[in-house]
Image (cartoon, rainbow, N blue to C red; front, side, top):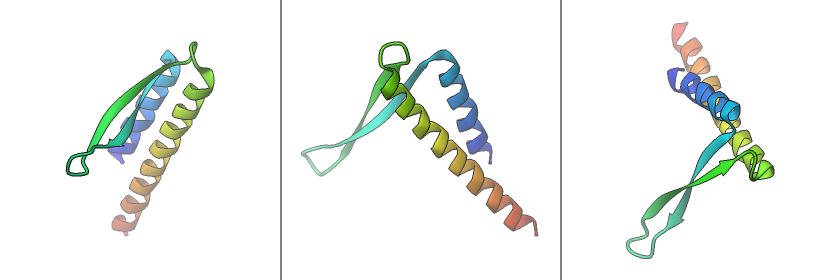
Length: 77
C-alpha cells in the first residue's frame, strides 16, 4: 500500500509541475540484456505524449494501490 501511495503522490506531483519521464526498455545485442532509457516530456512541448505518459502513471499507481488494499484486507481477516 505504501508503494501505491508513493506512486500516486509522485504522479500528482508530475502532473502539477507539467514534467514527466517514462523509462523505455531497449533490448541489447549482447546477451539479450535490457537497457533503460528515460524519455523526458514537458506538457507545454508535447501535450499529447504528456497525457499518454501521465495516464500510464495514474493507471499503474492505481492498480498497485488497489492490489495493496486487496492484500491488506485479505490478510486482516
